[in-house]
Image (cartoon, rainbow, N blue to C red; front, top):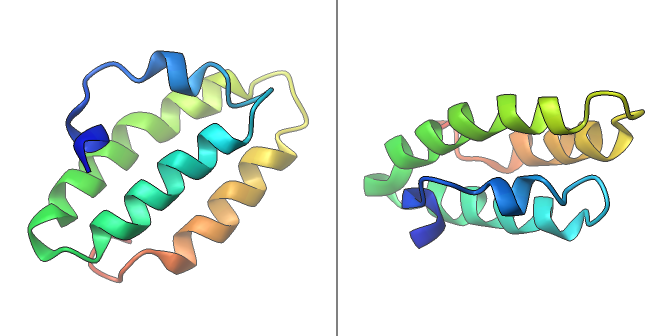
Length: 82
């Protein structure tokens, strides 16, 4: 859950186009933390902060990996987050 409080995740987000497992790290962190009532706001903030950065990283690609990631992430988050 410490990843939610990390200010600079650029090293993780920058490799997502070549290493999709980096997206899995973010996804599992958000999904697991969203189940903890006290972490819901931090999950929202983290998602709001990182999704735009991921969009920039995937610019110029077919973005299939990113679309798949978002499509599988959103239904798995608790309703309080989404």
